[in-house]
Length: 244
Ligand code: ADP
Ligand code: MG
Image (cartoon, rainbow, N blue to C red):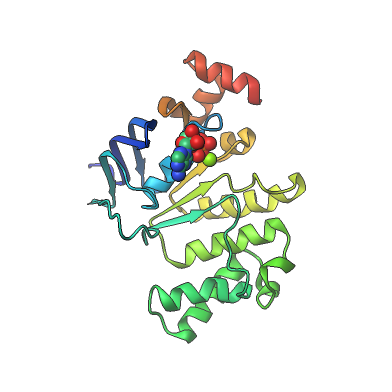
């Protein structure tokens, strides 16, 4: 039986002006796969996620999500509905309550009814264990709680794949654990995920596969234990020595 890929990236190239940021990227992600992307700052990790989410146009190559090729669309750079994206800086709507942060996009983007959207938001808040905060505003939450709302909001769209771009980098260390736990719960539910992180222990624990990027290139990828315990490439070895 042919393995089912949720995402296939073929020979992807992306530049900003004269700067080549992604060079001949090939990456395939199977249903329920958990892939971590590691690498130094500036290596192109965020740009890769943003291309998958349709927040950036690509120069050449293909991104195929659930058998449909993502098309560049200069006038309309909106987040692909098939993709849930979670950012380092949460990006919540400050003037909406926690509940509205989740329900409003369902009403405006998905044209769902108010009642249904509210119920869906309540269910998701229960899932990320924030039911008691439903009427609070983002500024009344801790960083970890904000990020869990952002995760719930992304899940509301029923994405095929969740992308996390350094979800704990803006958090105090003692707040990272609750966000890691929420991501682990999603993994248990069988969510397909790509996670960019500098938290090597988390990457090691949660990932099926780890991708090491350097300077716009995928230098090495493989099963989590192989990359962390017996990396082959010198650049991967050097990076891991610095970070672990
Ligand atoms: P990472 O997430 O691995 O730190 P990024 O994907 O954010 O790397 O950035 C890769 C390179 O692309 C960096 O050199 C960065 O300065 C550059 N870059 C990212 N976004 C833009 C942009 N919108 N315009 C110009 N250069 C950008
Ligand atoms: Mg980044």
